[in-house]
Image (cartoon, rainbow, N blue to C red; front, side, top):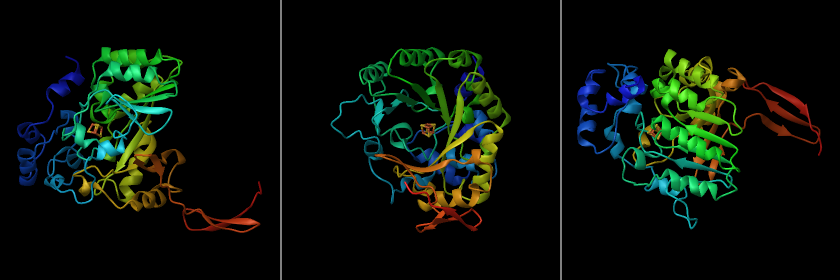
Length: 357
Ligand code: SF4
């Protein structure tokens, strides 16, 4: 058994196994024993938890909370609405579409970590929504839609699939003439870095007409280790770039210091900050959500001008009509016929000449 499979074999999804890593609080225990929800993580990720602090950012992302029973501000049947599943277009369950030229292709509902804040919670974590994930059906749909240029393979976590299944997916997609790029959304570099094995590297490696891009999800600097750094380096050596899509999470990364440290630390392990997503209104995750403005404030106060340009993600809300950027619009303070008044991150003003069209 390979190390990554061993991690899944010893998946921390029982109270007894969790107690080998942390001192479980009575509230955590009640949530685990009384709630009907899928939960769990790898022993590796569990080992990063603070055994004594229930507010530990890793604990909060992994362990169910009684707060998930509340849903004052979330949207019922969120995923159906968000992924435009309630439309006239005939699509397999595995294909979600918000744009003309690109789709999300869901190939599994299994994850290496069942994130409590997951926007696909209804399907992946709580499993009230059943989706058919037939890979060949999805491939045939993509093949017959020549306008599709870019496919995001998602889940669940597609890197949980066996090597031969990943190889098949990539090979079949590359055979489709109109496809220009393949993206994978996988949390494995963060929650299961052991997954980047020699076998997987062989599948990903090399120069190809259709490149592979990876986006992972890292939400707190504590999630970044030497093992993350090695896994990402291995992916880069295969010609695969790794970006990060963090989720803005209340009490986890919504303060200036943590937000900045997260984005700076990502670059130290060669992960390029790409997006910060507003935490979506899936049911039962009110306790993770901030006001929408919070993300833009953090970009303004923690990132822009305060650190390296490469560390700057775009803050977006992912809606049913696509992503909507919500970057702080603080830099053009005024404009007349002759000049703009611009403001920098410190509040200093300067003038810049207007250029007519
Ligand atoms: S790994 Fe992704 S799909 Fe799985 S629970 Fe986490 S956010 Fe959801």
